[in-house]
Image (cartoon, rainbow, N blue to C red; front, side, top):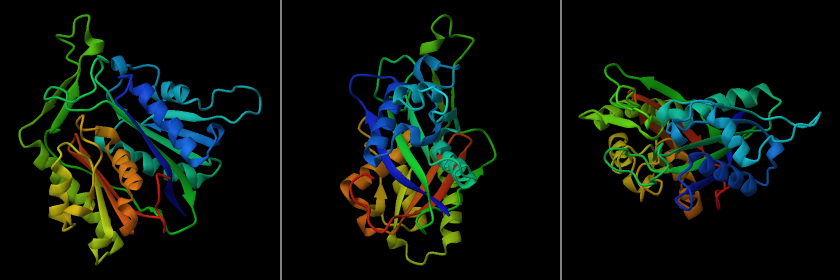
Length: 304
């Protein structure tokens, strides 16, 4: 048995800078596209990192669950939905896929909904810049179990030695009374090369396990610490550049939402019709990386 993508959805720009609102909207749209009722979602996993007003408690997953209208009935016998935050930077979505596989395999849960997204904690901006290189947006990935050969393969993970390459923190020594609206992001010199090294390790492991001889059937979706990063990864792996699918980078890096946004965009444009597999690769702070080879359903049409 495997785990496949039932549907995806994206929320970006518009009338709000709240990642709770964006992720909740994306969650609702994903359910609507799949024709799945809220009560059919057994677990919601939030993988976003940068949140409204640097919220610590309650878990942001619970706020998103409420915004999505999932599990809000409390009468005896009503279906329940469990939600939690799984925060591991850019690799969070693939970590959540791994967890979702275990949850679905255990039984008792029909669907797992993974949401991702980031925003500047001040809630005053949506576009990335040098000081805060992440765009405001949300995305959702609705997962289900399948007996077919399609779906995600094993998730390969790694963390390399040394300094973290990328850090984000609230400077408590200088935050004063405005700390809820501040975030410091530090990218070390050469950070992208170190992320690429980690990404290559897990990507090669995923490809080797599948023993693929023809990479022309593989599309690549990778995290986007820069617009060039997925292309550099493709070059190093021997995957054609025109096989690379990216999210809309008009506002900057979607960070934790990059993978589901890229998949949603590619499916909507019909880009994946000529491929049999998608190699998902994410790399971020740590440096850490995760990769999984996804076997596409026989027919991929409009966003599922």
